[in-house]
Image (tube, rainbow, N blue to C red):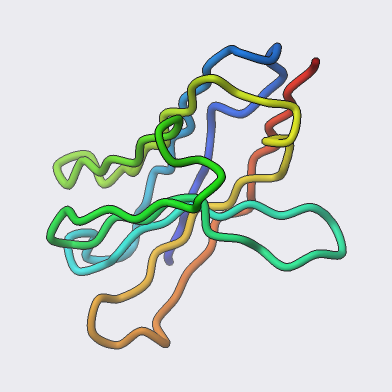
Amino acid sequence: QVQLVESGGGLVQAGGSLRLSCAVSGITFSAFDLGWYRQVPGKQRELVAAVTTGGSTNYGDSVKGRFTISRDNAKNTVYLQMTSLKPEDTFVYYCNARHRTWTTINYWGQGTQVTVSS
């Protein structure tokens, strides 16, 4: 059974930091590209950050320079370090794992709420 379990969300003041974690099980972790997405109800999920199996990273324009994605293949975990948080970063954040070759093999976590107060 594949599981992606996010943690680390919560309420933080503007300018603060949070680190999200996503523990993954049930897949060959090293064969999957990983990403963090965010969404508000009724709108499309947007890419926050992604890291490939080779370690290349990609960021959404609104978070460049503030957020850092990393993966630990030994712990089957992907992280999102968020700094200089803004109220507009308030979303539900979702972890995603997509096979590097067969991209239709795609899994999502249940989401974790991040709320940034002004």
